[in-house]
Image (tube, rainbow, N blue to C red; front, side, top):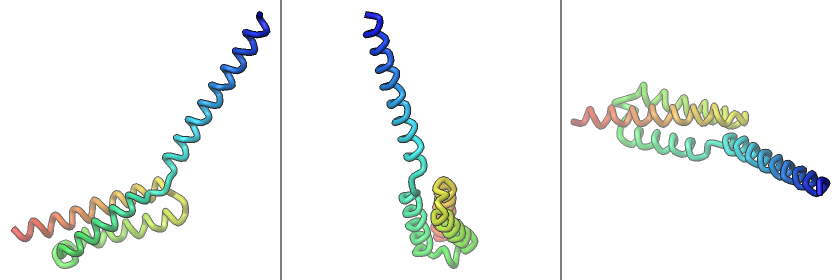
Length: 107
């Protein structure tokens, strides 16, 4: 009886270890994925700002957005996904700011 219980405890411990390892791996690989969506969002926001006339009416913000997008591309090429994600988000925010400036100047 004692042997049986010990065997069950070992199995339960083994199952727990596997579950913890699986959870850890999913967290690590989930966080370390390429920032595909963020890069796309940044490119689209920059294009929208350009189309709105930001090159003439908000050139500084547009230029900064483009610089951050380029930085994100370089970081992505190096496999630095978290840093690339942050640069892409910054590029998007700057592009949105440029577009807002253009739209406000039209009022």
